[in-house]
Amino acid sequence: MDQTRAEEIAIRQIEPGERLLWTGTPAPAAAAIGALPASLFGIPFTAFAGFWIWGAAEATSGAGRPGAFFPLFGLPFLLIGLGMLAAPLWAALRARGTVYAVTERRTLIIIGDGTGGVISHARSDIRDLMRVERADGTGSVFFAWRSRVSSRGFERRSRVGFVGIPEVRRVERLIREQILEPAA
Image 1 (cartoon, rainbow, N blue to C red):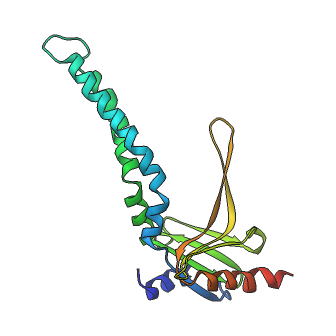
Image 2 (tube, rainbow, N blue to C red; image 1 turned 180 degrees about the vertical axis):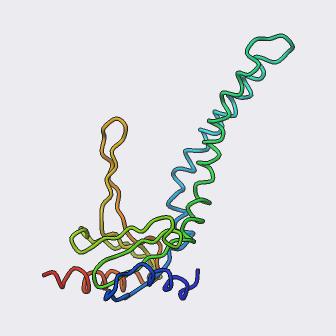
Image 3 (cartoon, one colour; image 1 turned 180 degrees about the horizontal axis):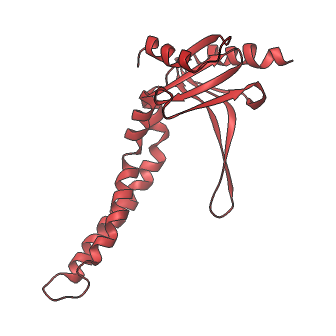
């Protein structure tokens, strides 16, 4: 997505009187790299599902054997495994439709032109500002936390922010100077 299109999308999401200071998009490659752990877990998961289907088919092959449908039980697991293997592709595609924005009041993560959702963090939501910068000046800036509770009741926290952006130091400075410091 080009810069002009990203700005158009961001402008549609800001409130009257709010000033757009910066817009950007995540690098699809950075998003794909972030999804690699799921993809790596997908290798043995898919292999086991394939082995299950093959083994069940071998065990039930032949006319008149009961349980000829038994190999089909492995298909959902095979599909899940294939989805995990494709996680970097899905992450890269999602990144191509994501826009990041900074105003003097808040940060925005806009997914799919806003149709996929808009995540907004106001001054009171921004905590533990953290920048991860590479030698070329690209990187990520994290500014909030997201908590999720598993079905077993365990809380899992993950950082929220702008991932894979150019000029990461400039964006961190904007957030600090325009959103956080005026509150002081």
